[in-house]
Amino acid sequence: MAKIFKFTLTFALTLLVSGCATILNTTTQEVEIKSNPPNAKITIDNKKFGVTPQIVNIERKKDHTIKFELEGYQLYEIQVTTKLSGWIWLNILNGFIPGMAIDYLTGSLNRLYPDILEVQLIPVPAPKEQISQ
Image (cartoon, rainbow, N blue to C red):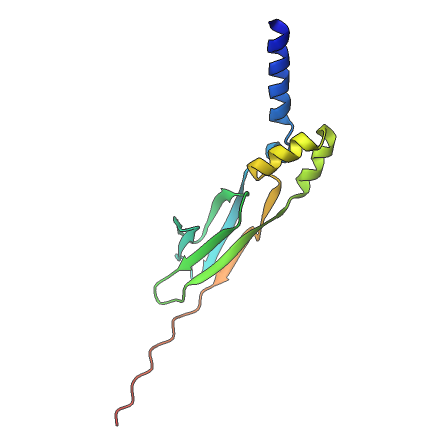
């Protein structure tokens, strides 16, 4: 019984520490968001995140759509995409396959790009006055 417990505990600990990117890179990433002019409303994947400027912490696992809205300015939308992180190669040190699987499932093998967004909002054009005849 003690051998089974030790084996199970060792196996579980090995799985927990085998994802190098998960441990070193985490499953989320900080993205700095700024706009000119400031105080634009930020929406990430249709969820409100306050106003600019700020740093948000979002999942590395998938791409994100970020929208900027400010009265008197055109809606601005940008895509933050995932790229393969260099941390993934540390999985070679621990057997590669278990670490890769864990990092893939948690999204830790990714890096979000760009990680700093500085957008210039464009004013909404003034309506053209109708010419009287």
